[in-house]
Length: 208
Image (cartoon, rainbow, N blue to C red; front, side, top):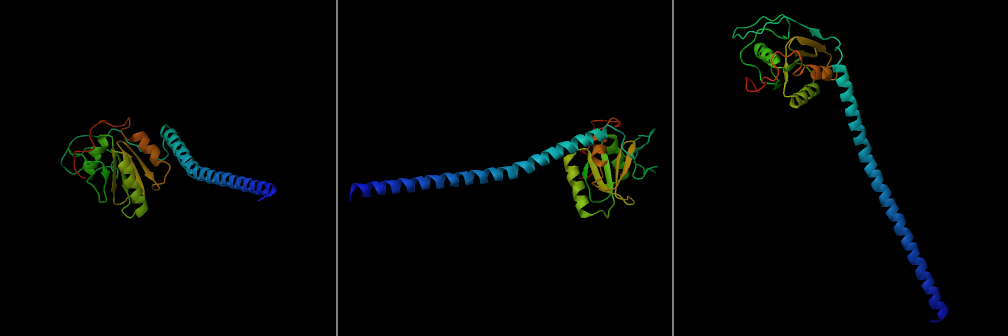
């Protein structure tokens, strides 16, 4: 093989190697771009979810610091322990004489005894009573809420339309689990300033 032929082959090999290096760089850029795209696709929605959650929490906190639309307040409520049935003025009740044993906070799929639930209110619980015919998805959301808040009592209640949220001396009728007033009510009244016995237990009583 002559010198010119060897030189030509070296040039062809060098050109081929350069083409391979360009292809490798191009492939690397594509892989990096794809990885960045995947990362953005994962990170951006997560960041949006976190941002939305923080915004919602701030809005709920601000709403809790203002009067809650439709909330009724009741004063001069008795608080004597009794084992007798109590004829409450409000339905569901928001306070009054009650059983010596409180209802354990949590979720119930059957009605609880009012006198036990009122004792839980005295300890700072919020009692969400719901229509027994409430949609399954909404009931599931109420169960989730009860898992998040140790002083939340949830149970069905005959005669309730949608939801009613009650704390000691205060109550609001809600349109459903997506009512914008629900979270502010929980923030404001779970162990809120209206609680006659703040910090008293909502476990170790009766029920689940």
